[in-house]
Picture 1 (tube, rainbow, N blue to C red):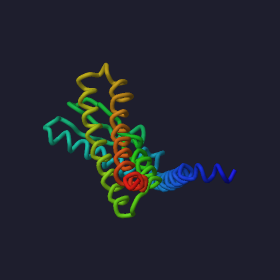
Picture 2: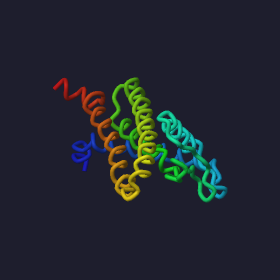
Picture 3: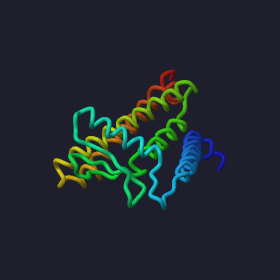
Picture 4: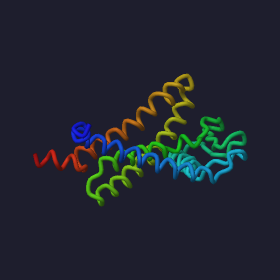
Length: 185
């Protein structure tokens, strides 16, 4: 058994750090979400921020857009050309994706300063791309409503998770402890 622990120690350390970070951040996120009254259909502040920033992006491009609280669920409705095009719910705010991103970076951590900077930079990038993703999704679903399932269920999740995957690859190959060992070998 000791032989296997030594053999798989790097993997087990990665897995342990990843799971611990993921569970801790998810726990903190659930505490944050617990502050909002779901029974009163109150959306969390970060979801509202994402909705507002999506509206701002579309307004920048002179689109006819507005947001309004959803009266039936904790969400924000996004209207494009006076038509309700999206319900921005907690799952749309990309915080769970950012938690996944951070957990992986910490599990493959390198030096403290680059790790923190990469986590901050990557999280901001994911957030910005998510806002643009929602804005573009809204416009495309307006003009191509028959493609809603493909756009919302396939293309845009593939885009956001693809970006996270590329960020992970860059981290592992350029900044993690593993990258430094392979360079010196």
